Length: 82
Image 1 (cartoon, one colour):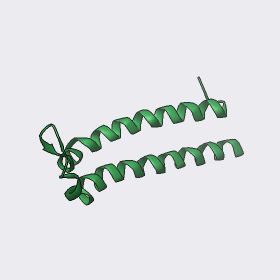
Image 2 (tube, one colour):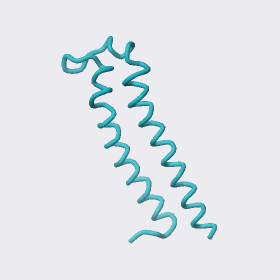
Image 3 (spheres, rainbow, N blue to C red):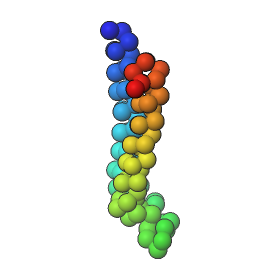
Image 4 (cartoon, rainbow, N blue to C red):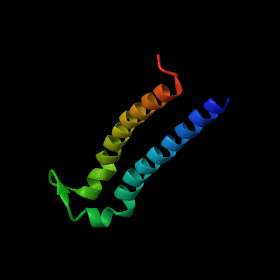
């Protein structure tokens, strides 16, 4: 039982940090820091606009791969691998 609780505790910690990063990228870069980021351009578009439109999607896809990596590592460390 302790092994399962430790597993889920670490899983929730991973989720908390990864979702916080996604929040910072999507809400922070797209809305809060928009004025500052618009001083820079990517492909002719202001960086704040780019983050609001595509950056958060890219960040979410990267976060999915990071989560899969972390969960595979966690599964192996707790003996839940296939």
